[in-house]
Length: 77
Image (cartoon, rainbow, N blue to C red; front, side):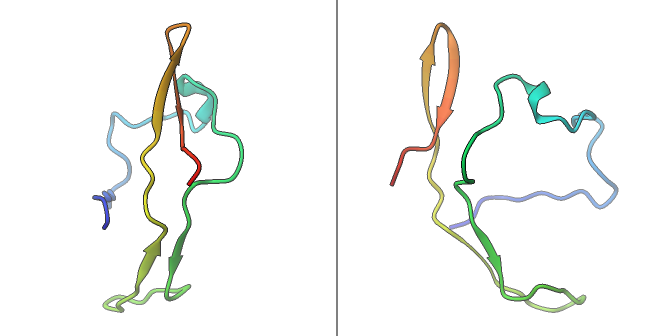
């Protein structure tokens, strides 16, 4: 299963964040290892070349509230 992935050949849309600091977007950044792992069948790409992209199954984050703040976390498998 895959999700839609969008890219923009002329760069990010006008509404995109211009501050590349993730701490400026509300809740603090996640701590610990990433819940994602993506691997590719090739480390380089040539036009027209077919490559395979694999990732671990997606785990949807769960939400809980504390003092009216939303907190998201990935449950342990």
